[in-house]
Length: 451
Image (cartoon, rainbow, N blue to C red; front, side, top):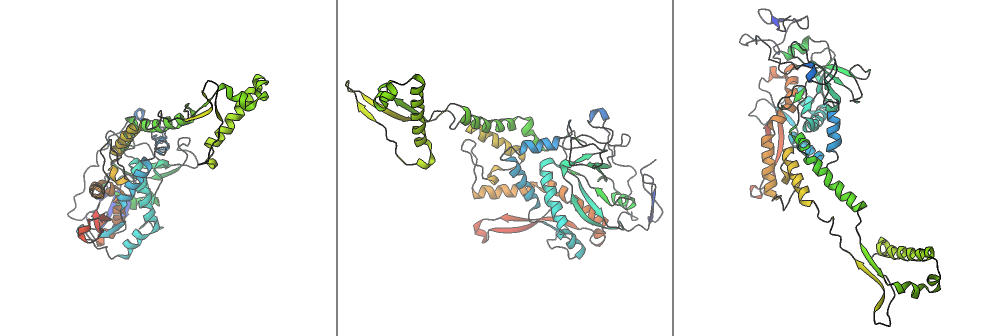
């Protein structure tokens, strides 16, 4: 059966074979006008053989063990740079928030209470914040929109936790992917568990996607987001994953561990205490001279414990240690000598390797290290005000494709809710606050950047 939608002569009635549904009284949105050219074929979607994609008959695993996102989170959270940098990227993608203008050239927020209310709604703000964070980590997203009771309006946009989502298997005949499974317990969960939720997903490539949702029966749909990566169909791979495949993350994890265990377990002498053999007899007298071997060892242990308590106890900081000393008959100095040793074994070791590793980490994260205050004499990095300002401008200039992904569901909402019927060139923009030089008379300026 063909997936092609069939319209009557004036385009007010549509028959959708895939859904066995007839749609009548079509509004302008989703209905072809006289000059609209209806595609005669669907976008090409090659299928992937089941044996080439790990999973079961219902869903496709994300990673061989179906826990790729969970593994990434565990590894990245052990690093001091990655989580904070991804958080900064997500924050800059959102800038000062989203506004809607009547066209791309305008910088004035459209004066429409429907649009203003939707963008100011707390759920929309939470969608943007949560989706930007997940997109920075995984470059995949599974937001859902929720319809009104009469299914005529999208009333809410919601960001599902990306790591909880798994694609259902594509149709092996058409290549279509039309469902997503949600569960917070992967990899132990399955698609058939009672707490697994299946949500229908729309295909963003379908030209009649709005009409398909109108003809459907669900009150919520997944609008899948992804940033393309080579040779990927179900789940895209973030560029920063190369820090794992290149082994730089292994290096960065190993260095702090080496330093930690070296300080804990390696024999690093702080003091060398010299005690002449005559000291014990002269100070302890008969107790030493007539004592057994174990009694003499007990005297030495007690002496050393008391001395170390004086030398290392923080409460004794800046206090003095008194020891006995004398000259014997051969004019040799006798007594106790305390030598403070300098530990050169761990100090500074692998610091240059750690700086180089962090520099490579910033490269793979697509982040100018000057924005994080990273400065390295070895790597020649600078972190002045001009460097930060230029780095910020470059980042914003390159943020367009990622912002387009985050705002794409809003364009769908605008079509479905009829906003584009009123404002055909309605444009969603990110409001940016840019740093300026002192000679401009102000420290910042505001720009509205189309995604």
